Image (cartoon, rainbow, N blue to C red):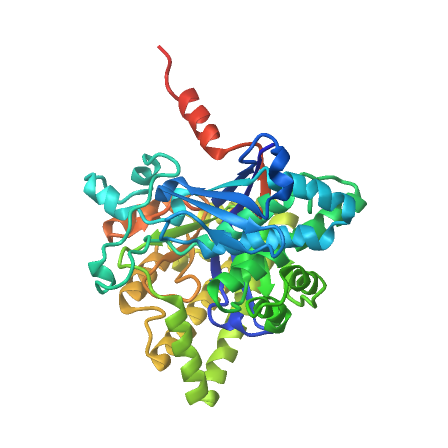
Length: 509
């Protein structure tokens, strides 16, 4: 039996910094970049003597990093011990394994526990695979002499092996780090591993998709279990309780998100201090999870684009630390900036929701406006529009743009006050030029900002102009698009699927 689950990466479009504190909301878009976890037994059957074993064998493989680690999982304490010489540990997957096995123990009765024990004694063989989009391949593309275009990225084989940043660029004394594109690989990976293991062990059933309301409630409860376990494992691996928007979008897909109260994970933090894991999981599953989640996705005929400027990633934790320091030092000014930023975030959300409703109720007029605006610079969108409904669509588009300009303005104010590059000058020039192009609705820096990435939302078929313009500014447009789907089961190992599709696309003469 093999179980494959996948979870998406994300782009935080609004809510950078504010999302860390309740009741501020953020809009997070899930993407078509997915992390996969493949779970199967190591041994075809349980060995007769295995009942006397104190340990369960666990094998973790990451083909892209050419890494394989072997572990022993204590049957009594559910703790994991690495027994191979692999220096590079993966705390996200290690915690995901411990927490999911503990969840099975915490929720099963005696009969189910016997079956669980038998399944676990066959060992756990876990393989993790991330789409190329999570990692930076700029260096390889440049080394191959290819242009910085999405087409060049598309020539790389799926799940390409990953290069490490050079030691020198990290100050010479740090371990080399994989260059990333900021899509939240650790959250997507944790969610995929938790989902695959929970399904494999029979704690949840993720294959249900039914019109029956009873089954839908069951499915919704199962996703909630995946969410709680993934949040806990991810926070413990990180060593802090973050806002959790990246795990939430990994489980449920695109959404408007308000964080949970950090206290809900105090049980998980207690586990680190030696409280039995099973007890901890009970507390987590019965905890008061008070996050808010509302469905959200981009209106029709709009495309999310992501670009990689190639100036190396910013460190989010240190930028968050600087903002917190500024809040303490200047509470009055920082509160005013946050209030204005929250208002602008809310306004953008309102306008995008209005556009989604207009598309639903007046499709022909909406489509006609998007088509014409996709070929015009924003200053000309309003020209020649006389029908009231079309005027309403154009007005909402322009209001959304203005809200984005105000968001960027307040993010820059915060960055300058805190002494960090939330929207550095190089990004400002790029974003201003992007927002002035035909058919571009929005452009900004996602999440905490910095040099990592830029995003744009384009209308109709105008995205090609943006990718060409970015390429001429030495910005690599990624192949990532919005995909509102959260965690899901896959029909098989994605590497087999890629081979099949590659073979079918070869011309047979």
